[in-house]
Image (cartoon, rainbow, N blue to C red):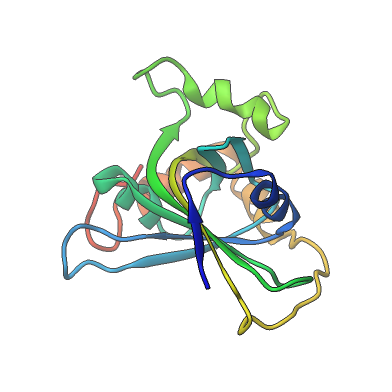
Length: 186
Protein backbone atom coordinates (compact mmCIF):
# COMPACT_ATOMS: atom_id res chain seq x y z
CA UNK A 1 0.00 0.00 0.00
CA UNK A 2 1.33 3.43 -0.93
CA UNK A 3 2.00 6.04 1.73
CA UNK A 4 2.25 9.74 0.93
CA UNK A 5 3.48 12.82 2.73
CA UNK A 6 4.49 16.38 1.85
CA UNK A 7 8.16 16.27 2.90
CA UNK A 8 11.26 14.14 2.56
CA UNK A 9 11.73 12.63 6.02
CA UNK A 10 14.91 11.04 7.40
CA UNK A 11 13.99 7.55 6.11
CA UNK A 12 13.31 8.86 2.60
CA UNK A 13 16.55 10.88 2.63
CA UNK A 14 18.50 7.77 3.64
CA UNK A 15 16.80 5.69 0.93
CA UNK A 16 17.55 8.34 -1.73
CA UNK A 17 21.21 8.53 -0.69
CA UNK A 18 21.58 4.76 -1.10
CA UNK A 19 20.25 4.68 -4.69
CA UNK A 20 22.66 4.75 -7.61
CA UNK A 21 20.05 5.41 -10.27
CA UNK A 22 16.88 7.48 -10.44
CA UNK A 23 14.32 8.21 -13.11
CA UNK A 24 12.88 11.56 -14.20
CA UNK A 25 9.41 11.78 -15.76
CA UNK A 26 7.88 14.77 -17.55
CA UNK A 27 5.26 15.45 -20.18
CA UNK A 28 4.25 18.40 -22.35
CA UNK A 29 0.81 19.97 -22.00
CA UNK A 30 -0.27 18.93 -25.50
CA UNK A 31 -2.20 15.65 -25.52
CA UNK A 32 -0.32 14.58 -28.64
CA UNK A 33 3.04 15.32 -27.00
CA UNK A 34 5.37 12.57 -25.92
CA UNK A 35 5.85 11.57 -22.29
CA UNK A 36 9.53 11.46 -21.32
CA UNK A 37 11.16 9.08 -18.86
CA UNK A 38 14.92 9.39 -18.40
CA UNK A 39 17.29 7.33 -16.24
CA UNK A 40 19.92 9.30 -14.33
CA UNK A 41 22.91 8.38 -12.20
CA UNK A 42 26.54 9.37 -11.56
CA UNK A 43 25.86 10.69 -8.04
CA UNK A 44 24.18 13.80 -9.43
CA UNK A 45 21.18 14.29 -7.10
CA UNK A 46 21.12 16.14 -3.78
CA UNK A 47 18.38 16.60 -1.20
CA UNK A 48 18.61 20.31 -0.40
CA UNK A 49 15.81 20.42 2.18
CA UNK A 50 12.73 18.40 3.16
CA UNK A 51 10.86 20.00 0.23
CA UNK A 52 13.60 20.60 -2.34
CA UNK A 53 15.97 18.45 -4.40
CA UNK A 54 18.26 19.21 -7.33
CA UNK A 55 20.29 17.26 -9.83
CA UNK A 56 23.04 18.04 -12.32
CA UNK A 57 21.65 17.70 -15.84
CA UNK A 58 24.34 16.40 -18.17
CA UNK A 59 24.31 16.73 -21.94
CA UNK A 60 22.09 14.16 -23.58
CA UNK A 61 20.87 13.27 -27.02
CA UNK A 62 17.62 15.10 -26.28
CA UNK A 63 16.35 17.92 -24.12
CA UNK A 64 12.87 16.69 -23.18
CA UNK A 65 13.09 17.20 -19.41
CA UNK A 66 14.31 20.78 -19.77
CA UNK A 67 11.68 21.59 -22.42
CA UNK A 68 8.78 20.06 -20.48
CA UNK A 69 9.78 21.62 -17.17
CA UNK A 70 10.11 25.01 -18.85
CA UNK A 71 6.68 24.64 -20.42
CA UNK A 72 4.68 23.46 -17.41
CA UNK A 73 6.90 22.64 -14.42
CA UNK A 74 5.48 19.15 -13.83
CA UNK A 75 8.20 16.76 -12.70
CA UNK A 76 8.38 13.38 -10.99
CA UNK A 77 11.60 11.80 -9.77
CA UNK A 78 11.43 8.09 -8.97
CA UNK A 79 13.84 5.86 -7.09
CA UNK A 80 13.47 2.09 -6.86
CA UNK A 81 15.46 -0.30 -4.72
CA UNK A 82 17.49 -2.62 -6.91
CA UNK A 83 19.31 -4.00 -3.87
CA UNK A 84 18.09 -4.54 -0.32
CA UNK A 85 14.52 -4.16 0.87
CA UNK A 86 11.94 -3.57 -1.88
CA UNK A 87 10.73 0.02 -2.16
CA UNK A 88 9.75 2.62 -4.74
CA UNK A 89 9.86 6.32 -3.82
CA UNK A 90 8.42 9.11 -5.93
CA UNK A 91 9.02 12.82 -5.48
CA UNK A 92 6.38 14.86 -7.28
CA UNK A 93 6.16 18.60 -7.65
CA UNK A 94 7.16 21.63 -9.67
CA UNK A 95 10.50 21.74 -11.40
CA UNK A 96 12.71 24.60 -12.55
CA UNK A 97 15.61 24.70 -14.96
CA UNK A 98 18.65 26.63 -13.75
CA UNK A 99 21.12 27.21 -16.57
CA UNK A 100 24.66 28.46 -16.06
CA UNK A 101 24.86 32.25 -16.12
CA UNK A 102 21.11 32.92 -16.17
CA UNK A 103 20.48 36.50 -15.10
CA UNK A 104 17.03 36.07 -13.56
CA UNK A 105 17.27 35.85 -9.78
CA UNK A 106 21.07 36.15 -9.64
CA UNK A 107 23.40 33.28 -10.39
CA UNK A 108 21.52 30.46 -8.71
CA UNK A 109 23.53 27.96 -10.79
CA UNK A 110 26.81 29.01 -9.14
CA UNK A 111 25.13 29.08 -5.73
CA UNK A 112 23.92 25.48 -6.14
CA UNK A 113 27.21 23.98 -7.35
CA UNK A 114 28.74 23.62 -3.83
CA UNK A 115 25.83 21.28 -2.96
CA UNK A 116 27.46 18.87 -5.43
CA UNK A 117 30.95 19.37 -3.99
CA UNK A 118 32.22 21.54 -6.85
CA UNK A 119 32.72 25.25 -7.52
CA UNK A 120 32.72 24.95 -11.31
CA UNK A 121 30.36 22.74 -13.30
CA UNK A 122 31.73 19.38 -14.42
CA UNK A 123 32.28 19.21 -18.19
CA UNK A 124 29.01 18.41 -19.92
CA UNK A 125 26.64 19.78 -17.28
CA UNK A 126 24.14 21.95 -19.13
CA UNK A 127 21.78 22.84 -16.26
CA UNK A 128 20.67 22.06 -12.74
CA UNK A 129 17.10 20.84 -12.39
CA UNK A 130 15.48 21.87 -9.11
CA UNK A 131 12.33 20.15 -7.85
CA UNK A 132 10.11 21.89 -5.30
CA UNK A 133 8.60 18.79 -3.72
CA UNK A 134 4.84 18.73 -3.16
CA UNK A 135 4.33 15.01 -2.61
CA UNK A 136 6.55 12.16 -1.43
CA UNK A 137 5.10 8.69 -1.96
CA UNK A 138 6.37 5.19 -1.18
CA UNK A 139 5.04 2.01 -2.75
CA UNK A 140 6.01 -1.62 -2.32
CA UNK A 141 8.32 -2.31 -5.28
CA UNK A 142 7.78 -6.06 -4.85
CA UNK A 143 7.83 -6.58 -8.63
CA UNK A 144 11.20 -4.83 -9.17
CA UNK A 145 14.00 -7.38 -9.70
CA UNK A 146 17.24 -7.34 -7.74
CA UNK A 147 20.41 -6.14 -9.44
CA UNK A 148 23.96 -5.76 -8.20
CA UNK A 149 25.84 -2.51 -8.69
CA UNK A 150 29.05 -3.07 -10.65
CA UNK A 151 30.29 0.50 -11.04
CA UNK A 152 29.79 3.71 -12.93
CA UNK A 153 30.15 3.88 -16.69
CA UNK A 154 32.88 6.15 -18.02
CA UNK A 155 31.48 6.69 -21.53
CA UNK A 156 29.75 10.01 -20.78
CA UNK A 157 32.85 11.60 -19.26
CA UNK A 158 34.98 10.37 -22.17
CA UNK A 159 32.45 11.67 -24.72
CA UNK A 160 32.37 15.07 -22.96
CA UNK A 161 36.19 15.28 -22.95
CA UNK A 162 36.33 14.38 -26.64
CA UNK A 163 33.76 17.09 -27.50
CA UNK A 164 35.37 19.71 -25.27
CA UNK A 165 33.70 22.90 -24.05
CA UNK A 166 33.23 24.44 -27.51
CA UNK A 167 32.10 21.16 -29.05
CA UNK A 168 29.50 20.71 -26.32
CA UNK A 169 28.11 24.21 -26.90
CA UNK A 170 27.85 23.48 -30.62
CA UNK A 171 26.13 20.16 -29.84
CA UNK A 172 23.63 21.92 -27.57
CA UNK A 173 22.86 24.34 -30.38
CA UNK A 174 22.25 21.50 -32.86
CA UNK A 175 20.68 18.80 -30.69
CA UNK A 176 19.36 20.47 -27.51
CA UNK A 177 17.68 23.65 -28.79
CA UNK A 178 14.22 22.07 -28.99
CA UNK A 179 12.44 18.94 -27.78
CA UNK A 180 11.13 16.26 -30.13
CA UNK A 181 7.74 18.01 -29.87
CA UNK A 182 9.27 21.39 -30.79
CA UNK A 183 9.31 22.96 -27.32
CA UNK A 184 12.15 25.32 -26.37
CA UNK A 185 15.17 23.54 -24.89
CA UNK A 186 18.52 25.24 -24.32
